[in-house]
Amino acid sequence: MATESSEGEEETKLMGGNLQLVVDGDLREMAKNAAWSVSSCKPGNGVSSLRDDNYETYWQSDGAQPHLVNIQFQKKVKLQLVALYVDFNLDESYTPSKISIRAGDGFHNLKEIKTVELVKPTGWVYISLSGNDPRETFVNTFMLQIGVLSNHLNGRDTHVRQIKVYGPQPNPIPHQPFQFTSTEFITYSTLR
View (cartoon, helix red, strand yellow):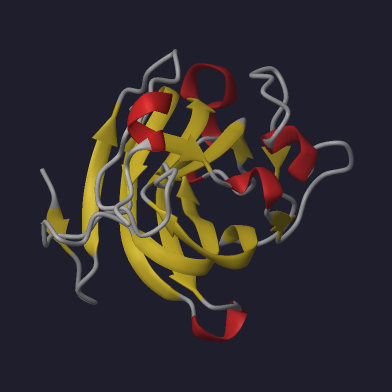
């Protein structure tokens, strides 16, 4: 169901959604310490509504498309998965139908890495940031931008209820190729 778009990035169609957030145990939420901003919002429906873990609240844009969510990190991070909670049943024409994911060092050099088309989603929608090459399992970036390019039923403003960004768990011991889990193994994991 994936199709190539004209600029070489991957375009995917996603249908449905999961009502429960399910993420692999080897991933961790990365955006807690990031600086979040949006291109526009209605009063009371800003960035805090995207991060409050409440499905009843939502970010509502206010202005011309594309509607943007910017996530800036203090240092370069590895990102692997973006999870969005959207609800077509509640939001109808406010529900995003086409989303673009861009990454870069800042606003000046963002590059589109993924374009996704959503078909009447209700629940969590997962967007993998890995490329076509099996060695490209994550994106190494300072900034991630999520752009809502269009809405269902040609809606103007958009509602996004939650956004989570995940990256790989760090190795507990730097420069150690293996991941030891018990305290005893970690104690004896280095050679003199």
